[in-house]
Image (tube, rainbow, N blue to C red; front, side, top):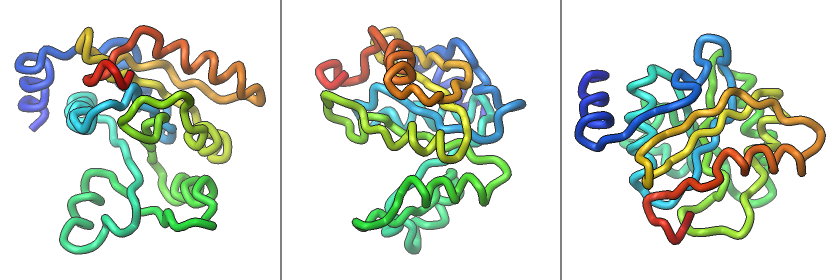
Length: 182
């Protein structure tokens, strides 16, 4: 199936991957991976192709209601983990626990928290990385240049403002599928 993913991603869709093309998979078994800009449902499939091509095991979280029969088997097979999203739950703590339970866990999140344009990114991914003591790996969903650029692992510091400046700089000039939402 890897050859088929490569055929579709590289030849048919015309995409390319640059930078840390294996997501440091041999040295970093746990990380928060942020994908931006997240502007379309197409992003999910680009991510699945990328995962298959690089051989990097990645995970995602979804509301626990999605993980009921018959879909639970599929979602878990592709790396999904259920999370209780009802109010009053400490989601950062719950997700940190997922990191503790697994030998290999790379959680992929969209920092915008939605596919629409936002004035400010959510900060959950940052607090999850700090709480789990794992690096952040950034990758772009650049539909303008049809490329996924992948950063080296970045460990958050105690200076959130400087860290976000560094993270946001990685995404400068990147356009999502829906340009107006980028």
